[in-house]
Image (cartoon, rainbow, N blue to C red):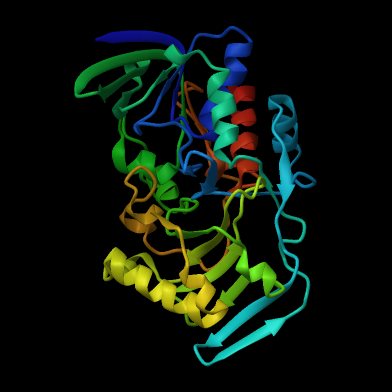
Length: 357
C-alpha cells in the first residue's frame, strides 16, 4: 500500500498536530503518522467518572511567559485557571520530621488548562481532517532516495513518500526506532542520543478525593520530601472541582521503580500521605499512575535516569538534513523553551519557516 503526500509529519504530539493544523489552514497536502493509538504524545489527561480529567503528563502553563501557547489557547477558545497554592506547604525531611511553611509557593504564577491539557490536543485534532492522521502506524525506516517511509500500520506494511518529512518526536526515539538510509553520521547519532527526552524518566501518581481535606487544614497540598517515595505533591484538582486531587511525582528513579510492583508502590505512597495529611488522606476514591519510563513511545533505555533539574536543550544542533527534505521538530529541539509546551510550538514554527512552500 503506497501513498504520496507533500508533507509527512512523524508524530502526533503537540508539535505534530500544530504543524498539521497550520499547514491544512493553508491548504497544503499533509499526513501525520503516529505510532500510538491516540494523539497527544506526552500530553495525556485521564477521565474519572466521565466528569473530569486529570493530567498525567504536562499540566502547568505560564501564559505571561509563553506567548505562542497563549495565542493558540485564545484562538482555540480554551481557558486556563490558576494553580491552587493558598495555604501552607509541607517539607518532609524524614518520616518523623515534617515542617510546615507559610512562604509563597513557587507555583503562585502557574496555571492549568481547563478540562486538562488534553483539551488542547482535542481542540487541534478536531480542527484537522480525520483522514490526515494515521494512528497505530510505526515508522520503521526513512530513505532519502525518493524520500520514502516504510511503516507498519495495523499489522500491514505501508510505503509513504513525500516532498518533505518532519520528525516531530524526541530525537532519542527517532534514533532508537527508525533506520535512516543513508545513515546519519556518528556525530549526528550521538547528538540525538545526548538529548534527554522530556518526561521520560518521570512517574506521576494522582490521588482522587471527594473533598479537599488538605485545604481544610489550611494546606496548599504542596509537599517536598527527602524521604518519599513521593518527592513532590501538588493540588491537582480540576477547575470545576466536582472532585479533588493530589498530583505527585515519584522520587524513586526508574531503576528503583522497576524493583517495586504497583501494589508496593501504592502502599508506600499511602503511608507517606498518612504521615503528611493524616487519616483523611486514606479515603481515596481512585489512584491513577503513569510511569513514562515504561512507555516505549516516550522512553529508551538511556532515558531511565531522570535529570535532577529541567534538562538543558542545546540550541546549536542541526535541524535540517538531506537538502532540507528532512526536518526536526518537537520540544527537545526548541531553541529557547525546550521541554515545555511553548517549546513544542516554537520548534514547530521554526519547521514551518524551513519548508520550501
